[in-house]
Amino acid sequence: MDSAKISFNLSNASFGANAGFDVQVGTPAEFTSVRITVEGKRVCDGVMECNGAKFTAPEAMGPVTLGIEVTRVENAGAGQVTLACFGTDGVPVGSTGNNSSSSSSSSSTTQTTNTTLAAGGAAGGAIGGAIGAALGGGGGGVQATRDSFRFSTQGVGDLSRGWDAWIIGQGRIFGGSLSGGGFEGTVGAHVNAGPNAKIGVLLSYGDYSITQGATTTNTSALTYGPYFKLAISPRYQLDGYLAFATPSYTTGAVSYTAARTIGGLNVRARYDIGGIEIDSFLGLRGFSEALPAASGAARTITSYTGSIGSKAKFNPGAPLRPYVSLAGEYNSFSNGLGTTTDSLAPRLGLGVDYTGAAGNLSVNLDGGQLFQGAQDYGFGVTYETSW
Image (cartoon, rainbow, N blue to C red; front, side, top):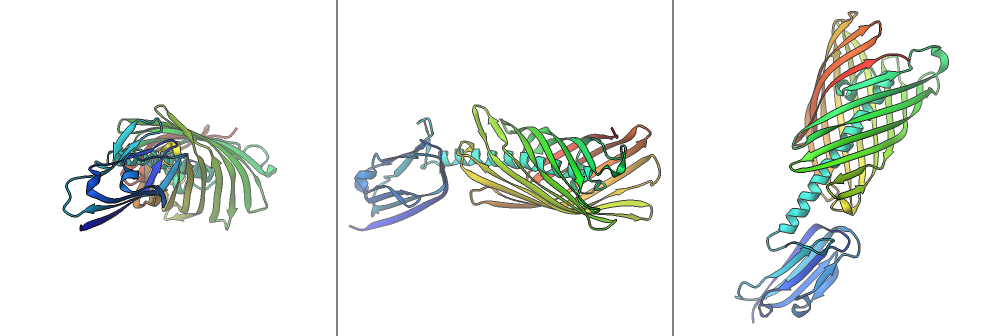
């Protein structure tokens, strides 16, 4: 009797604890062999053994490879080998016959990826911008296009005291495939570490509500870590930070906590060209976030953003000074399941600075891309004064 052998491997499969699948062999006489494996380990081997076999994950697993190998009798009928998946509560969620379980899992992990990228990206941009502004980066870089509210001790009292404390609040609105927004409040303090360097510590709290379709996720995180500034010359400076957080996420009845490491490094320069003040920057920021199985699949998401741009401020010496900022951002992220996505997009900012006896006031509007298909926008008012 002639036969035909068929092998199929499904990569990047994932199961929550106590989730799995039931195996059903329709019309067993039409098969001479059936073998099912998970990550190379046998679930069942043989037509009769596989018909009615069941796989239950003892703990969260993923990504893993699901192997299906069958040998059919030549010219057999329409018999099928079906894997009927069930969730952590034992309720069936679909089968491999119509890909319903695969689609559900893919949708869940995609939403989690997008939420993580939005929250982590917003936090990284806000913290990096706050540090740049607090260290006198001249508004170059991300902070040139992030709305904020700032108070600082810089310039108060004895300038030789060698320390400075600051607090900056920033907000974001999401667009495109996402909606919602949030706020990031960052405080810090640094001391002189020699004539050309400063070192400090930061503490930042972010709270965001992110909606994709009909699904809304609320997330918050307390971030902490060191930062530094090195004055390379009167014109150039290098600054950076490394911070840590355990962000919490809540989507409906599902809640979980992740582990995030976030950092950034920037080179900044200031020029005066024809009466126009130019603040330029070159930077790299990114984060890595380890997600638990409750997020849909245990994995680590990574995101990196390289940026280059300038801010031009006009009308020197006047109390009212308009400005425009333009940056190019290259984003690359991995969803932790074998897929990496790259994109290149501009970020544009417009605003006006006003200097008065009571302090400095700035009003700005900006927009850019978080990742392909999703944008973030901001309208902000920044007031800076000494206390």
